Length: 247
Ligand code: PEP
Image 1 (tube, rainbow, N blue to C red):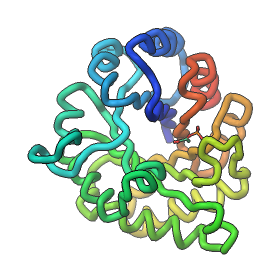
Image 2 (cartoon, rainbow, N blue to C red):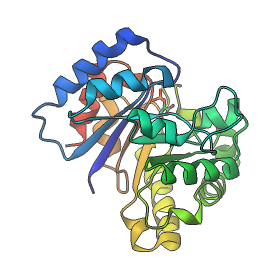
Image 3 (spheres, helix red, strand yellow):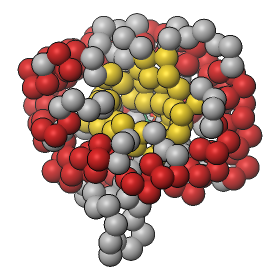
Image 4 (cartoon, rainbow, N blue to C red):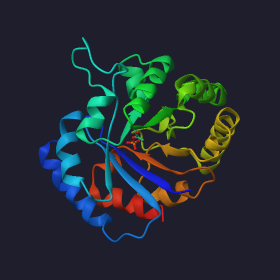
């Protein structure tokens, strides 16, 4: 399956970061890698980066959206607004959104539908905490989150799933190849049971301290169809090295 290498800039980046985008775009030119490349900057940079990358191999996405199309939601941004400004993807249900903003899987499912209706590809994040893993609850937590975050209306529409163990995000800890293989297989099985053939073709990304030194091993694990990369996506040379590992 074609891979997706996606960068999540979180709350990082200013207009001057267009230099990083320019470096990524030039690094992608002529790269013969069977993978798509995506950067998800903060809202403030979406329009500028979408204009800067138009016609290039680098896609631009957002990090969340509201579930409504418009209305009295001070400070929020709708999926339609994201599509209008040039985003192609939106990350939904990231563990930092679940923790910082109390997003439950039911909220995520509503946002996923909003994204689909706006023509965006949602990247739906799931993952267990260290306490969950140590209690032997990884499978249950991940599959419960997955089931409740994916609305039935997704059938027939493109979407991506990201497995991000919370204990591996921004910590320098990475799940082992065995741990990743086990969870990705569970996710693949659940997607196929629910969405049939479509579930076979859904890209399942791994996220959690991916860097140039571990990318090739992780991207070589069965059912790993790409990466969601936080810290290492902020430096063009690191992000490009991870991208090249997908080839
Ligand atoms: C993320 O937050 O999606 C992530 C994977 O972060 P990092 O790569 O920094 O662990």
